[in-house]
Image 1 (cartoon, rainbow, N blue to C red):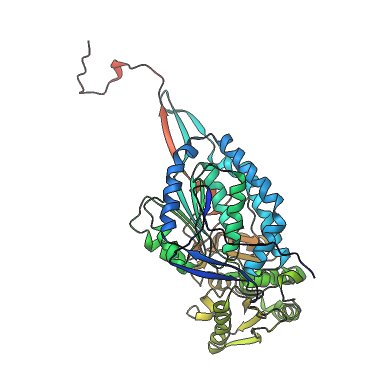
Image 2 (cartoon, rainbow, N blue to C red):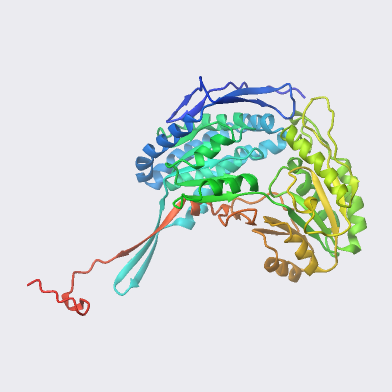
Length: 505
Protein backbone atom coordinates (compact mmCIF):
# COMPACT_ATOMS: atom_id res chain seq x y z
CA UNK A 1 0.00 0.00 0.00
CA UNK A 2 1.56 3.30 -1.10
CA UNK A 3 0.96 6.18 1.26
CA UNK A 4 1.89 9.82 0.77
CA UNK A 5 3.67 10.90 3.92
CA UNK A 6 2.81 14.39 5.12
CA UNK A 7 6.05 16.25 5.89
CA UNK A 8 6.74 17.06 9.54
CA UNK A 9 9.42 19.46 10.71
CA UNK A 10 10.13 20.67 14.22
CA UNK A 11 8.69 24.15 14.85
CA UNK A 12 9.23 24.68 18.55
CA UNK A 13 6.93 25.35 21.48
CA UNK A 14 3.76 27.33 20.84
CA UNK A 15 3.82 30.23 23.31
CA UNK A 16 1.79 33.44 23.27
CA UNK A 17 0.43 32.89 19.76
CA UNK A 18 3.59 31.84 17.92
CA UNK A 19 6.02 28.95 17.62
CA UNK A 20 9.24 29.52 19.54
CA UNK A 21 12.06 27.11 18.57
CA UNK A 22 14.40 25.86 21.28
CA UNK A 23 18.02 26.62 20.48
CA UNK A 24 19.96 26.11 23.72
CA UNK A 25 17.74 23.74 25.63
CA UNK A 26 17.89 21.38 28.60
CA UNK A 27 17.88 18.27 26.44
CA UNK A 28 16.21 16.63 23.47
CA UNK A 29 14.41 13.43 22.56
CA UNK A 30 13.96 11.60 19.29
CA UNK A 31 10.46 10.93 18.04
CA UNK A 32 10.85 7.55 16.31
CA UNK A 33 7.76 5.74 15.05
CA UNK A 34 7.19 2.52 17.02
CA UNK A 35 5.80 1.01 13.81
CA UNK A 36 9.06 1.51 11.89
CA UNK A 37 12.28 2.23 13.75
CA UNK A 38 13.73 3.69 10.54
CA UNK A 39 11.02 6.36 10.53
CA UNK A 40 12.46 9.32 12.44
CA UNK A 41 9.44 11.61 12.79
CA UNK A 42 11.40 14.50 14.31
CA UNK A 43 13.99 15.46 16.90
CA UNK A 44 12.58 17.58 19.71
CA UNK A 45 14.76 19.81 21.90
CA UNK A 46 13.10 21.07 25.07
CA UNK A 47 13.66 23.93 27.47
CA UNK A 48 12.22 23.99 30.98
CA UNK A 49 12.13 27.80 31.07
CA UNK A 50 9.54 27.65 28.28
CA UNK A 51 7.13 26.10 30.81
CA UNK A 52 7.29 29.29 32.89
CA UNK A 53 6.97 31.51 29.80
CA UNK A 54 3.90 29.61 28.61
CA UNK A 55 2.23 29.77 32.04
CA UNK A 56 2.86 33.52 32.29
CA UNK A 57 1.46 34.02 28.75
CA UNK A 58 -1.65 32.02 29.67
CA UNK A 59 -2.11 34.02 32.87
CA UNK A 60 -1.83 37.35 31.03
CA UNK A 61 -4.29 36.22 28.36
CA UNK A 62 -6.83 34.94 30.87
CA UNK A 63 -8.71 38.12 31.92
CA UNK A 64 -9.58 39.22 28.38
CA UNK A 65 -10.50 35.69 27.26
CA UNK A 66 -12.50 34.96 30.40
CA UNK A 67 -14.47 38.22 30.05
CA UNK A 68 -15.66 37.37 26.53
CA UNK A 69 -19.20 36.06 26.23
CA UNK A 70 -19.70 32.35 25.60
CA UNK A 71 -20.89 33.23 22.09
CA UNK A 72 -17.69 35.17 21.40
CA UNK A 73 -15.52 32.27 22.57
CA UNK A 74 -17.72 29.89 20.62
CA UNK A 75 -16.83 31.63 17.34
CA UNK A 76 -13.14 30.75 17.86
CA UNK A 77 -13.99 27.18 18.87
CA UNK A 78 -16.16 26.66 15.77
CA UNK A 79 -13.36 27.95 13.55
CA UNK A 80 -11.11 25.37 15.20
CA UNK A 81 -13.70 22.66 14.50
CA UNK A 82 -13.63 23.52 10.80
CA UNK A 83 -9.85 23.07 10.84
CA UNK A 84 -10.07 19.80 12.78
CA UNK A 85 -12.57 18.45 10.24
CA UNK A 86 -10.56 19.67 7.24
CA UNK A 87 -7.35 18.01 8.48
CA UNK A 88 -8.59 14.62 9.73
CA UNK A 89 -6.51 12.64 7.21
CA UNK A 90 -3.31 14.49 8.05
CA UNK A 91 -3.94 14.30 11.79
CA UNK A 92 -4.73 10.59 11.51
CA UNK A 93 -1.48 9.87 9.70
CA UNK A 94 0.58 11.76 12.28
CA UNK A 95 -1.23 9.88 15.08
CA UNK A 96 -0.49 6.59 13.27
CA UNK A 97 3.20 7.42 12.84
CA UNK A 98 3.61 8.67 16.41
CA UNK A 99 1.72 5.83 18.15
CA UNK A 100 1.91 3.01 15.59
CA UNK A 101 -1.85 2.42 15.81
CA UNK A 102 -3.59 1.22 12.63
CA UNK A 103 -4.88 3.86 10.22
CA UNK A 104 -8.55 3.01 10.89
CA UNK A 105 -7.90 3.44 14.62
CA UNK A 106 -6.04 6.72 14.13
CA UNK A 107 -8.74 8.05 11.78
CA UNK A 108 -11.41 7.36 14.40
CA UNK A 109 -9.39 9.42 16.88
CA UNK A 110 -8.86 12.28 14.43
CA UNK A 111 -12.58 12.47 13.66
CA UNK A 112 -13.35 12.64 17.38
CA UNK A 113 -11.69 16.07 17.66
CA UNK A 114 -14.43 17.96 15.85
CA UNK A 115 -17.11 15.70 17.35
CA UNK A 116 -15.94 16.67 20.85
CA UNK A 117 -16.61 20.31 20.03
CA UNK A 118 -20.15 19.48 18.89
CA UNK A 119 -20.89 17.49 22.05
CA UNK A 120 -19.42 20.16 24.33
CA UNK A 121 -21.32 23.05 22.75
CA UNK A 122 -24.63 21.23 22.21
CA UNK A 123 -24.76 18.91 25.23
CA UNK A 124 -22.22 19.55 27.98
CA UNK A 125 -22.74 23.32 28.26
CA UNK A 126 -26.25 22.58 29.56
CA UNK A 127 -24.60 21.28 32.75
CA UNK A 128 -23.32 24.78 33.57
CA UNK A 129 -26.22 26.91 32.44
CA UNK A 130 -27.20 29.84 34.61
CA UNK A 131 -30.05 28.96 36.98
CA UNK A 132 -32.27 31.45 38.80
CA UNK A 133 -34.07 30.38 42.00
CA UNK A 134 -36.99 32.60 42.94
CA UNK A 135 -37.21 33.27 46.69
CA UNK A 136 -34.02 31.40 47.54
CA UNK A 137 -34.44 33.43 50.74
CA UNK A 138 -37.69 35.29 51.51
CA UNK A 139 -38.11 37.94 48.77
CA UNK A 140 -34.49 37.39 47.64
CA UNK A 141 -33.66 35.59 44.41
CA UNK A 142 -30.74 33.24 44.06
CA UNK A 143 -28.61 32.69 40.97
CA UNK A 144 -26.19 29.87 40.20
CA UNK A 145 -23.52 30.73 37.66
CA UNK A 146 -20.38 28.87 36.58
CA UNK A 147 -17.26 30.93 36.04
CA UNK A 148 -13.84 29.98 34.70
CA UNK A 149 -10.94 28.98 36.95
CA UNK A 150 -7.89 30.54 35.26
CA UNK A 151 -4.92 28.70 33.75
CA UNK A 152 -5.41 24.98 33.13
CA UNK A 153 -2.40 22.69 32.67
CA UNK A 154 -3.25 19.74 30.41
CA UNK A 155 -0.85 16.78 30.53
CA UNK A 156 -1.52 14.34 27.73
CA UNK A 157 -1.01 10.58 27.24
CA UNK A 158 0.59 8.76 24.29
CA UNK A 159 -2.23 6.33 23.49
CA UNK A 160 -4.79 8.96 22.42
CA UNK A 161 -2.41 11.88 21.94
CA UNK A 162 -5.00 14.17 20.31
CA UNK A 163 -8.43 13.03 21.48
CA UNK A 164 -7.80 12.80 25.24
CA UNK A 165 -6.05 16.18 25.67
CA UNK A 166 -8.68 17.69 23.39
CA UNK A 167 -11.31 16.37 25.81
CA UNK A 168 -9.83 18.64 28.50
CA UNK A 169 -8.82 21.57 26.29
CA UNK A 170 -12.14 22.28 24.55
CA UNK A 171 -14.24 22.45 27.76
CA UNK A 172 -11.49 24.54 29.40
CA UNK A 173 -11.50 27.09 26.61
CA UNK A 174 -15.25 27.42 26.08
CA UNK A 175 -15.63 27.93 29.85
CA UNK A 176 -13.20 30.86 29.66
CA UNK A 177 -9.95 29.34 30.91
CA UNK A 178 -6.59 29.54 29.16
CA UNK A 179 -4.47 26.44 28.57
CA UNK A 180 -0.88 25.19 28.68
CA UNK A 181 -0.67 21.75 27.07
CA UNK A 182 2.25 19.35 27.47
CA UNK A 183 1.99 16.33 25.15
CA UNK A 184 3.58 12.98 25.94
CA UNK A 185 7.24 12.86 24.90
CA UNK A 186 6.27 9.69 22.98
CA UNK A 187 3.95 11.68 20.68
CA UNK A 188 5.32 15.21 20.19
CA UNK A 189 4.45 15.43 16.48
CA UNK A 190 0.74 15.03 17.23
CA UNK A 191 0.97 17.79 19.84
CA UNK A 192 2.77 20.11 17.43
CA UNK A 193 0.23 19.59 14.63
CA UNK A 194 -2.60 20.14 17.11
CA UNK A 195 -0.99 23.50 18.01
CA UNK A 196 -0.63 24.34 14.30
CA UNK A 197 -4.40 24.10 13.94
CA UNK A 198 -4.81 26.49 16.88
CA UNK A 199 -2.39 28.86 15.15
CA UNK A 200 -4.52 28.72 11.99
CA UNK A 201 -7.68 29.34 14.04
CA UNK A 202 -6.12 32.61 15.27
CA UNK A 203 -7.07 32.44 18.91
CA UNK A 204 -5.90 35.48 20.91
CA UNK A 205 -2.22 35.19 21.89
CA UNK A 206 -1.65 33.19 25.07
CA UNK A 207 -5.07 31.54 25.20
CA UNK A 208 -3.63 28.19 24.05
CA UNK A 209 0.02 27.25 24.56
CA UNK A 210 1.99 24.06 23.93
CA UNK A 211 5.30 23.10 25.50
CA UNK A 212 7.23 19.91 24.73
CA UNK A 213 9.32 18.25 27.39
CA UNK A 214 10.28 15.27 29.50
CA UNK A 215 8.83 14.09 32.83
CA UNK A 216 10.64 16.87 34.70
CA UNK A 217 8.94 19.41 32.43
CA UNK A 218 5.58 17.94 33.37
CA UNK A 219 6.49 18.24 37.04
CA UNK A 220 7.45 21.87 36.56
CA UNK A 221 4.19 22.61 34.75
CA UNK A 222 1.85 21.12 37.36
CA UNK A 223 3.79 22.81 40.18
CA UNK A 224 3.70 26.28 38.58
CA UNK A 225 2.25 28.98 40.80
CA UNK A 226 0.45 30.37 37.74
CA UNK A 227 -1.57 27.18 37.18
CA UNK A 228 -5.08 26.91 38.67
CA UNK A 229 -5.94 23.39 37.55
CA UNK A 230 -4.21 20.21 36.34
CA UNK A 231 -6.06 17.96 33.89
CA UNK A 232 -4.21 14.68 33.43
CA UNK A 233 -4.69 11.42 31.57
CA UNK A 234 -2.13 8.66 32.06
CA UNK A 235 -0.87 6.04 34.48
CA UNK A 236 -1.69 5.72 38.17
CA UNK A 237 2.01 6.17 39.05
CA UNK A 238 2.28 9.54 37.25
CA UNK A 239 -1.11 10.66 38.57
CA UNK A 240 0.11 9.93 42.10
CA UNK A 241 3.24 12.04 41.47
CA UNK A 242 1.05 14.94 40.32
CA UNK A 243 -1.02 14.63 43.48
CA UNK A 244 2.15 14.66 45.59
CA UNK A 245 3.65 17.56 43.61
CA UNK A 246 0.58 19.72 44.25
CA UNK A 247 -0.21 18.60 47.81
CA UNK A 248 0.18 22.10 49.25
CA UNK A 249 -1.44 23.79 46.23
CA UNK A 250 -4.89 23.57 47.75
CA UNK A 251 -6.38 26.00 45.19
CA UNK A 252 -5.69 23.74 42.22
CA UNK A 253 -8.39 21.49 40.85
CA UNK A 254 -6.96 18.08 39.88
CA UNK A 255 -8.73 15.90 37.33
CA UNK A 256 -6.72 12.66 37.26
CA UNK A 257 -7.89 10.03 34.78
CA UNK A 258 -5.59 7.09 35.40
CA UNK A 259 -5.33 3.40 34.61
CA UNK A 260 -7.57 0.38 34.68
CA UNK A 261 -7.52 -3.38 35.25
CA UNK A 262 -10.92 -3.89 33.71
CA UNK A 263 -13.02 -7.04 33.89
CA UNK A 264 -15.58 -8.55 31.52
CA UNK A 265 -18.02 -11.05 32.99
CA UNK A 266 -19.65 -13.59 30.64
CA UNK A 267 -22.59 -15.47 32.19
CA UNK A 268 -24.08 -18.76 31.00
CA UNK A 269 -27.03 -17.09 29.21
CA UNK A 270 -24.88 -14.64 27.19
CA UNK A 271 -24.99 -14.24 23.41
CA UNK A 272 -21.77 -16.19 22.94
CA UNK A 273 -20.63 -14.87 19.56
CA UNK A 274 -21.28 -11.28 20.60
CA UNK A 275 -19.44 -11.76 23.89
CA UNK A 276 -16.41 -13.23 22.12
CA UNK A 277 -16.28 -10.48 19.49
CA UNK A 278 -16.74 -7.64 21.98
CA UNK A 279 -14.13 -9.11 24.33
CA UNK A 280 -11.59 -9.49 21.51
CA UNK A 281 -12.11 -5.81 20.74
CA UNK A 282 -11.85 -4.92 24.43
CA UNK A 283 -8.65 -6.88 25.02
CA UNK A 284 -6.66 -6.28 21.84
CA UNK A 285 -7.79 -3.05 20.19
CA UNK A 286 -4.90 -0.54 20.08
CA UNK A 287 -2.67 -3.46 21.16
CA UNK A 288 -4.20 -3.33 24.62
CA UNK A 289 -2.95 0.23 25.18
CA UNK A 290 -6.22 1.66 26.44
CA UNK A 291 -7.06 2.51 30.04
CA UNK A 292 -10.49 1.01 29.35
CA UNK A 293 -9.07 -2.17 27.80
CA UNK A 294 -10.22 -5.61 28.96
CA UNK A 295 -7.53 -7.19 31.15
CA UNK A 296 -9.59 -9.90 32.83
CA UNK A 297 -12.44 -12.14 31.67
CA UNK A 298 -14.54 -14.02 34.23
CA UNK A 299 -16.52 -16.87 32.71
CA UNK A 300 -19.41 -18.95 34.00
CA UNK A 301 -18.09 -22.56 34.07
CA UNK A 302 -20.96 -23.81 31.86
CA UNK A 303 -19.71 -21.79 28.89
CA UNK A 304 -16.03 -21.41 29.86
CA UNK A 305 -14.59 -24.13 27.61
CA UNK A 306 -16.58 -23.04 24.56
CA UNK A 307 -15.80 -19.35 25.06
CA UNK A 308 -12.10 -19.91 25.73
CA UNK A 309 -11.55 -22.10 22.66
CA UNK A 310 -13.35 -19.74 20.27
CA UNK A 311 -11.67 -16.70 21.81
CA UNK A 312 -8.25 -18.34 21.50
CA UNK A 313 -8.78 -19.34 17.86
CA UNK A 314 -9.96 -15.82 16.96
CA UNK A 315 -7.08 -14.16 18.84
CA UNK A 316 -4.57 -16.23 16.86
CA UNK A 317 -5.99 -14.85 13.60
CA UNK A 318 -5.77 -11.14 14.50
CA UNK A 319 -3.57 -9.29 12.02
CA UNK A 320 -0.54 -7.38 13.31
CA UNK A 321 1.48 -4.94 11.25
CA UNK A 322 2.44 -1.45 10.09
CA UNK A 323 -0.25 1.23 10.32
CA UNK A 324 -0.28 1.72 6.54
CA UNK A 325 -1.37 -1.92 6.07
CA UNK A 326 -4.47 -1.29 8.21
CA UNK A 327 -4.07 -4.34 10.46
CA UNK A 328 -6.13 -4.91 13.59
CA UNK A 329 -3.11 -4.40 15.87
CA UNK A 330 -0.05 -2.21 15.60
CA UNK A 331 3.01 -2.16 17.87
CA UNK A 332 3.46 -1.22 21.51
CA UNK A 333 4.69 2.34 22.05
CA UNK A 334 8.39 1.64 22.79
CA UNK A 335 10.99 -0.92 23.77
CA UNK A 336 10.31 -0.51 27.48
CA UNK A 337 6.64 -1.40 26.91
CA UNK A 338 7.69 -4.57 25.07
CA UNK A 339 10.05 -5.54 27.91
CA UNK A 340 7.27 -4.97 30.48
CA UNK A 341 4.84 -7.06 28.40
CA UNK A 342 7.27 -9.97 28.10
CA UNK A 343 8.19 -9.71 31.79
CA UNK A 344 4.54 -10.07 32.80
CA UNK A 345 4.28 -13.28 30.77
CA UNK A 346 6.99 -14.67 33.04
CA UNK A 347 5.34 -13.29 36.19
CA UNK A 348 2.03 -14.90 35.23
CA UNK A 349 3.72 -18.26 34.70
CA UNK A 350 5.63 -17.95 37.98
CA UNK A 351 2.37 -17.21 39.82
CA UNK A 352 0.84 -20.49 38.58
CA UNK A 353 -1.25 -19.10 35.72
CA UNK A 354 -1.40 -21.35 32.67
CA UNK A 355 -0.15 -19.85 29.41
CA UNK A 356 -2.76 -20.66 26.75
CA UNK A 357 -1.29 -18.21 24.21
CA UNK A 358 2.21 -16.87 24.74
CA UNK A 359 2.95 -13.23 24.00
CA UNK A 360 6.26 -12.66 22.27
CA UNK A 361 8.10 -9.99 20.31
CA UNK A 362 7.57 -10.14 16.54
CA UNK A 363 10.11 -9.57 13.79
CA UNK A 364 8.15 -8.11 10.85
CA UNK A 365 8.96 -6.46 7.53
CA UNK A 366 8.92 -3.07 9.26
CA UNK A 367 11.20 -3.26 12.30
CA UNK A 368 9.11 -2.03 15.23
CA UNK A 369 7.85 -2.80 18.72
CA UNK A 370 5.44 -5.53 17.64
CA UNK A 371 4.16 -8.29 19.94
CA UNK A 372 1.62 -11.10 19.68
CA UNK A 373 -1.53 -11.20 21.84
CA UNK A 374 -1.50 -13.47 24.88
CA UNK A 375 -3.95 -15.36 27.10
CA UNK A 376 -3.40 -16.77 30.58
CA UNK A 377 -5.75 -19.07 32.46
CA UNK A 378 -6.01 -18.25 36.15
CA UNK A 379 -6.49 -21.46 38.08
CA UNK A 380 -6.91 -19.72 41.43
CA UNK A 381 -7.92 -16.15 42.19
CA UNK A 382 -5.29 -14.42 44.32
CA UNK A 383 -5.83 -10.76 45.26
CA UNK A 384 -2.12 -10.46 46.12
CA UNK A 385 -0.89 -11.79 42.78
CA UNK A 386 1.27 -9.20 40.99
CA UNK A 387 0.03 -10.45 37.61
CA UNK A 388 -3.64 -10.45 38.58
CA UNK A 389 -3.68 -6.89 39.95
CA UNK A 390 -1.17 -4.96 37.78
CA UNK A 391 -2.04 -2.90 34.72
CA UNK A 392 0.12 -4.31 31.92
CA UNK A 393 -1.00 -1.94 29.13
CA UNK A 394 -0.47 -4.55 26.46
CA UNK A 395 -2.50 -7.24 24.63
CA UNK A 396 -2.84 -9.72 27.49
CA UNK A 397 -5.99 -11.14 29.01
CA UNK A 398 -6.41 -13.32 32.11
CA UNK A 399 -9.32 -15.77 32.09
CA UNK A 400 -11.06 -16.81 35.34
CA UNK A 401 -14.02 -19.08 36.08
CA UNK A 402 -16.77 -18.71 38.68
CA UNK A 403 -20.50 -19.44 38.97
CA UNK A 404 -20.86 -17.45 42.21
CA UNK A 405 -21.76 -13.85 41.39
CA UNK A 406 -20.63 -12.56 44.80
CA UNK A 407 -17.22 -14.13 44.17
CA UNK A 408 -17.23 -12.64 40.66
CA UNK A 409 -17.82 -9.17 42.07
CA UNK A 410 -15.04 -9.73 44.60
CA UNK A 411 -12.66 -10.53 41.71
CA UNK A 412 -13.85 -7.48 39.78
CA UNK A 413 -13.16 -5.18 42.76
CA UNK A 414 -9.89 -6.78 43.87
CA UNK A 415 -7.23 -4.80 41.99
CA UNK A 416 -7.63 -1.32 43.45
CA UNK A 417 -8.53 0.03 40.00
CA UNK A 418 -12.14 0.89 39.23
CA UNK A 419 -12.64 2.13 35.70
CA UNK A 420 -14.85 -0.18 33.60
CA UNK A 421 -16.70 -3.46 33.91
CA UNK A 422 -18.68 -5.24 31.18
CA UNK A 423 -21.38 -7.85 31.78
CA UNK A 424 -22.67 -10.21 29.09
CA UNK A 425 -25.97 -11.70 30.22
CA UNK A 426 -29.65 -11.49 29.34
CA UNK A 427 -30.47 -11.23 33.07
CA UNK A 428 -31.28 -7.61 33.92
CA UNK A 429 -31.41 -8.36 37.65
CA UNK A 430 -27.79 -9.49 37.49
CA UNK A 431 -26.90 -6.24 35.72
CA UNK A 432 -28.68 -4.20 38.39
CA UNK A 433 -26.83 -6.11 41.10
CA UNK A 434 -23.54 -5.31 39.37
CA UNK A 435 -24.49 -1.63 39.14
CA UNK A 436 -24.52 -1.51 42.93
CA UNK A 437 -21.64 -3.87 43.74
CA UNK A 438 -19.03 -3.01 41.10
CA UNK A 439 -16.66 -0.26 42.23
CA UNK A 440 -16.37 1.26 38.78
CA UNK A 441 -17.22 4.50 37.02
CA UNK A 442 -18.49 2.78 33.85
CA UNK A 443 -20.51 -0.43 33.65
CA UNK A 444 -21.50 -1.74 30.22
CA UNK A 445 -24.20 -4.31 29.55
CA UNK A 446 -23.56 -6.62 26.58
CA UNK A 447 -20.93 -4.18 25.34
CA UNK A 448 -17.13 -4.24 25.57
CA UNK A 449 -15.22 -2.20 28.15
CA UNK A 450 -13.66 -0.16 25.33
CA UNK A 451 -15.07 2.81 23.45
CA UNK A 452 -16.84 5.38 25.64
CA UNK A 453 -19.37 8.00 24.53
CA UNK A 454 -18.53 11.70 24.80
CA UNK A 455 -22.17 12.24 25.72
CA UNK A 456 -21.60 10.36 28.99
CA UNK A 457 -19.23 10.95 31.92
CA UNK A 458 -15.92 9.06 31.83
CA UNK A 459 -14.06 8.43 35.06
CA UNK A 460 -13.16 5.75 37.56
CA UNK A 461 -12.89 4.96 41.22
CA UNK A 462 -9.91 3.93 43.34
CA UNK A 463 -6.61 3.98 41.45
CA UNK A 464 -8.45 4.83 38.21
CA UNK A 465 -9.31 8.41 39.11
CA UNK A 466 -10.06 11.06 41.71
CA UNK A 467 -13.79 11.56 41.22
CA UNK A 468 -13.42 14.08 38.40
CA UNK A 469 -15.24 12.36 35.55
CA UNK A 470 -14.27 13.71 32.12
CA UNK A 471 -16.02 13.52 28.71
CA UNK A 472 -19.53 15.00 29.13
CA UNK A 473 -18.75 16.10 32.72
CA UNK A 474 -15.41 17.80 31.91
CA UNK A 475 -17.10 21.20 31.75
CA UNK A 476 -17.86 20.87 35.47
CA UNK A 477 -14.25 20.69 36.65
CA UNK A 478 -13.34 23.48 34.22
CA UNK A 479 -15.66 25.85 36.09
CA UNK A 480 -16.38 27.08 39.62
CA UNK A 481 -20.03 27.35 40.71
CA UNK A 482 -20.74 30.84 42.03
CA UNK A 483 -23.87 31.46 44.12
CA UNK A 484 -25.45 34.93 44.28
CA UNK A 485 -28.26 36.35 46.38
CA UNK A 486 -29.89 39.25 44.53
CA UNK A 487 -32.07 41.58 46.61
CA UNK A 488 -33.78 44.41 44.69
CA UNK A 489 -35.82 45.68 47.67
CA UNK A 490 -35.25 48.97 49.50
CA UNK A 491 -33.85 48.96 53.03
CA UNK A 492 -36.54 48.50 55.69
CA UNK A 493 -35.34 49.68 59.10
CA UNK A 494 -38.25 47.93 60.83
CA UNK A 495 -36.74 44.56 59.88
CA UNK A 496 -33.34 45.21 61.48
CA UNK A 497 -32.19 42.46 63.81
CA UNK A 498 -32.71 42.86 67.62
CA UNK A 499 -30.13 44.72 69.63
CA UNK A 500 -28.65 46.79 66.80
CA UNK A 501 -30.09 50.19 67.94
CA UNK A 502 -29.87 51.78 64.52
CA UNK A 503 -30.81 55.45 64.51
CA UNK A 504 -30.15 57.17 61.19
CA UNK A 505 -32.69 59.97 61.48
